[in-house]
Structure formats: C-alpha cells, structure tokens
Image (cartoon, rainbow, N blue to C red; front, top):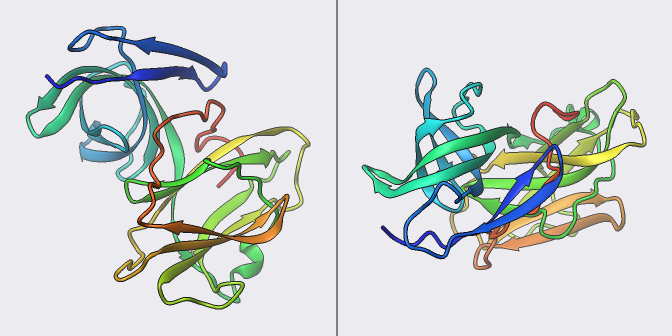
Amino acid sequence: MKRFKLCLALFSILLSTTLLSCDKNDGYSIGDLGASWATVHVLSDNSYYLSSDQFGKLWIAANSADWYKPINGERVISYFNPLTDNYNSYDMAVKLEAIYPVLTKDIIELTNENSEELGNDPIIIFKNNFWISNGFMNIVFRQNTPTTQKHFINLVKGPSVNGDNDEYVYLQIRYNTYDDVSGYWQNGAVSFNLDSIDFTNKKGIIVKMNSDTNGEIEVTVNFNQNTERTSIDYTRANTREVMIK
C-alpha cells in the first residue's frame, strides 16, 4: 500500500472550523480523512464513483452520505476516509463521509441577444480562489447575497479587451446581481466544464472579468504553469443550493 501522506484539513462548511489530522504510520486508519473537489460519474441509479482532483478515481465502498442523489458530471466537495489503494480499476477505495454539490455549468457563447441577461456586475475573487483542475475551471467568489432573486454567474466565450492572440482561448466571467443585494456577504462556488473548448496549439486561457477592486481586467492562465490546487481553504464555499444559478 503506497503512503497516503496527508496532513489533511478536516473542515466544516457550516461551522467554518478547520482541524488537522496527520497519520505518520504506513497504511490508513479510521482517523485519516481526505478532502477534495471531485467529479461525479454515475454507473447506474444511485451507484457512482468520484474522480478526485487530487487522488484519482475513488470507489465508494461505504457511504455515510446516502442522501445524495448523484448527477453525472456534477462537481462536488467530498470528504472521505481512505480504506485501501489500487482497488480493482480504482486508485483508492474510500468510505464517503460527506459530500456537497457545487454549481456546475457549461461554457456558453456571448451574443448580442444574451449579453444583457448575462450582466457584467463587479465580482470579488481572491488570489488562489480561481484554478483549473480535472477539466474544469473552478471559482470561489465573494457574494453580496440577494434577498429574493438568485444571482446569475457564467463563463462565456467572448472577445479580448486588448485584441485577440491566437495562442490563447478568450473567456469572460459574467455576473448578474439583478440589482438585488442584501449587504450580507458569503462565499459562492462554481465549476465550469472546459470540454467544449478546443485547446489544440493553445498556450493557455485569458479570462476577462469585471473586478470589484480593479475594474475590467484580464487574467492569464498558462498551461505550462501549475494550475492545480494543492490545498483546500474554502471553508465557507457554498454549494448549488445557495443564491446563485
């Protein structure tokens, strides 16, 4: 059994609490806990496995979150107790302790017809809360939550601010608050599927956004850079049930 060297964060989304558990012995124990963003792959009915961004294919040998109804391709934040490595065709067999669905969306085309509905309200995204993993662009953002109308967040194909460079794919984050904000702030989370993008001969992605602090900016993500998240610090990242759509 390979060493699962984790000094892993056991954190609570609801209580915003972070604990650490480190096992220095070979193998796994009941006290080991993994946390990872992952993609759901439905096998049949309620049978599914997780493709973890950090730990590969996870077979769910035991499940303490049997309330969850899997949706194929949905992104989730998962908490699990590792049981064994290299289980059949899976990288690991686990006991799933908790799972939280994340709003998961495809990229859409920006057109004259949908531009107004997509909006372009300022958005707050802190450094390291914007990354690519497992074929998804993942974003944790600060949200001035609405009172009644769900906010609308999208990743769209659109032109560059300063002129296109054929070596990059140009995308835009578009956010619409519908002028409905409560003054109560919390984190929101969303994953955008990048499968529809042809990255052949591309160096990376340039993302335009309307920053609450800096105005309209472009962020470059080069593919030769490490864009994977290696730690998890989004303790208040909300799932699809919160005030975004």
